[in-house]
Image 1 (tube, rainbow, N blue to C red):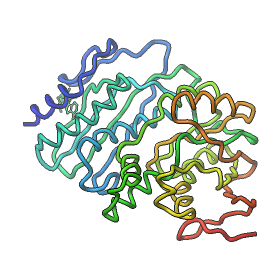
Image 2: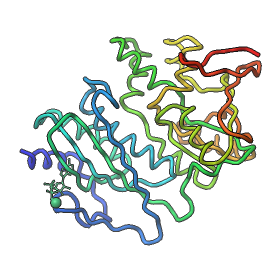
Image 3: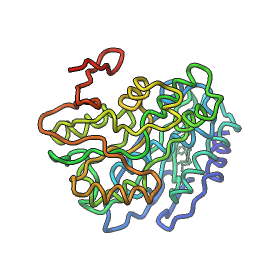
Length: 319
Ligand code: ADP
Ligand code: MG
């Protein structure tokens, strides 16, 4: 049974690549790494009930398990090439495998990514994907290069996935805006082309998986700097603004996870050019703040007053 499951996955995800000398079927895959490039590798595990809600469609799980990994390559400015898939299933559920493989393959084809091997075991539903990509030596985008005076930008819109998760947990989302937010949760778009476009421009980059404040916080810590954000500038979708009030949507945009947008820093003089490049790629980029001396992140409202973090979220304490 294990082998027919593996065959189903192999058939449904087939993607020809010259650099795959030996794919699924032997004890290890054999891959030809381009001699002039570095290999970028990342792995992410998703556990049912932790990283995706119970009841998520198999195709969405397949898509998302790859998307979150492609997002890591995007954040490094790497070109995706290969993946490994470790699948733990409660039972040999052929319908689940077919749906999963269809969702995975849909995204893999878009990036000419080949699934070259994996592992299949029985247990609580857990999906682990490892991806491999290429980057020219010295060109990878790291978290550590942000400089005082750089602008802070993000691709796309923030808070949609966390808004979608609230709708799923509350058991609704039937209307169009709700469906949009839930789609953003279940089928995030990895910003691979944006990451490639940022290679010679961004001083630091990270993908937003844990929320803007947490992930920009990683850039600040790795770079030894602080940041100031203007809450007014946070890009929020019309769906999020329609379904959540201003304070709730701001909180989701600051702290909600799972958007898989890129947060990056660029020297202020490059902001216009970078925004023009990313607009052509369809995701756009919004300037939300700046890198400053010190550490930590200050969020300011329209009047320039600091927002303070409370246990409930981010409150406006005024001057
Ligand atoms: P081994 O026992 O030698 O580790 P397996 O029986 O686990 O081999 O796997 C047989 C082949 O199928 C290997 O090439 C492995 O990489 C591949 N494979 C197993 N599970 C998966 C999976 N879920 N997705 C893709 N390839 C898989
Ligand atoms: Mg083996």
